[in-house]
Image (cartoon, rainbow, N blue to C red):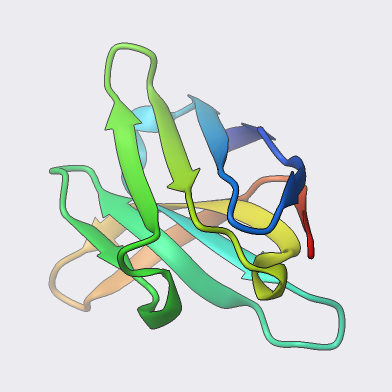
Length: 123
């Protein structure tokens, strides 16, 4: 079991910055990757960024150059630094931990989701 605690959401003016945090607990050794996703009501949830256990990062196309995902191994916390925020970035942002990767099948046994944190961007 993995639990995820998210924080850092809030209201920011367009062009501003926010840093989101995701703090996993429980069976954290089983985590292979942590992703950030976001969702607007009525729209499909989309990948924002992710980081693997060995430090490989990846981003959604619209986030490249503006968002940075990182990990503090001492604190066991993943951060999403968001800069140059746009009104279209407003969404609920969710932390997702994927666990127990099976290299033979290319699949993860389980994944866990945080409660989400609201990001609002004003024009």
